[in-house]
Length: 300
Length: 290
Picture 1 (cartoon, each protein chain N blue to C red):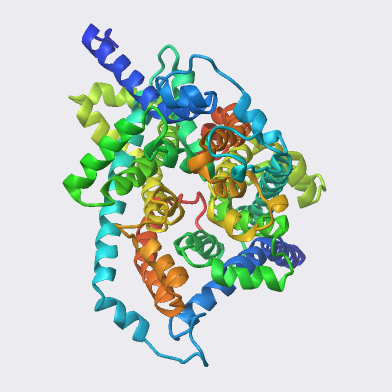
Picture 2 (cartoon, rainbow over the protein chains, first blue to last red):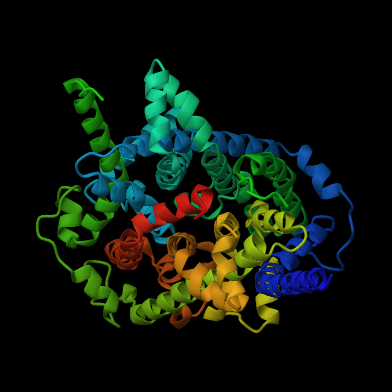
């Protein structure tokens, strides 16, 4: 009896400690995210604008409804979906390729691994600047004519701004495939070698082994990769903005919202627009949680 | 396993080569650019540098850059690059340390002490990734102003940890959760406190996962461009990222690329040094447990 009470107080103490230890993280997220998010949600129902005179009116769901009638919105949505799908598929395919390439030992593997790790490790806050000037060089540089030809070739085939969009996509894939490759390599390393040996005896082809052994065991890693890749694509604002120098012909939802807020001063519609992504991403996340949440040994 | 045929080996090798070139080319290209003289930049072969020079790097450190070329004195600009370097170091190191400290505390609570609903706590923290950053900096500006941190490095030290935190908490708490109970129990029975058991036993065990979390945090912090350029306005307070963003790159292209490299080299070296630990930590966090 005494033991039981003692245990219970110990448990209560643990719970108190747990909340205490959680508090810095929660406090940090509340300061940096909760107020801004609340502000954004509130603003999305109002006509708040730094340009307007007079008070701010509560407009209800007007800002949301207006989006649906706006061709710009549909265009941005279409571009965002294409961008997210194309980059995610490419990143997953390349990343999986990298991981499989590195899965087995060969001479120089450590160096190749490092090479594949670098695009992600290279600080993209500055590499995006480097990319911009590589793909859109100042006219004086030696490779400017070549890049110019490429740019005008792509632009004339697909419309103005296409080259800029291609460069954004390439940059996103370049950096993301590196991250996903390393993440999946970590996943492959976790697969016990005996399992592969067993599969070697049991299965007929390489493809079969890949499908029946590698993919199922990589599932948590793949799910995590998909989610992070989707959020990075949907939330991609800085890179699109930088690589197109703000002259955005192919807006994604992020840049369209930014443009609405900063250039047009329409805080309300801009907030509504960026919030419209949240339910979609939440649903995706809830599905993926089941895949990448590790089952606990003693389910609580 | 029977030896693979020559064509399979050849195929593997060429794929490896292709992957390496694909990953390294942009980095190589930026490095080569930064070593060029203006003459070579205009007339030389874009892919190689014949007479490498460090002049572009030196120019960054000169308070008053030399007037170059035809554009004249109107473009005489100087950059407090040493200040930027120091600021970047403070912000990056501080953010990584803060991220790790806060994440380890939260992860230990969620993975080890398991308060009621710990799973949902963890999910909620991870779910903050769905909040689009797009125009969040407008209200964030109000927060930063209210705290009196505008144009202050502390603003970045406040915001950056929140960006890597969700993934770090996720990773660390999954690892802590996997560790068998017995690991601490022995120490607890001996009369050690939970804190002692944590610092003496669990923390040393989790080194690879801590490395992974740290490298992830560094990568996240170094990838930010928006926050740094929105919140740091005075030149003397800027980080390298924010600073280079203000270059008139059409005219300072070579100096800008040099600046890019100067920031990238330390970050890349640190990450490369820990690269293997990063993979090991990711593996440990997701599956292994002990």
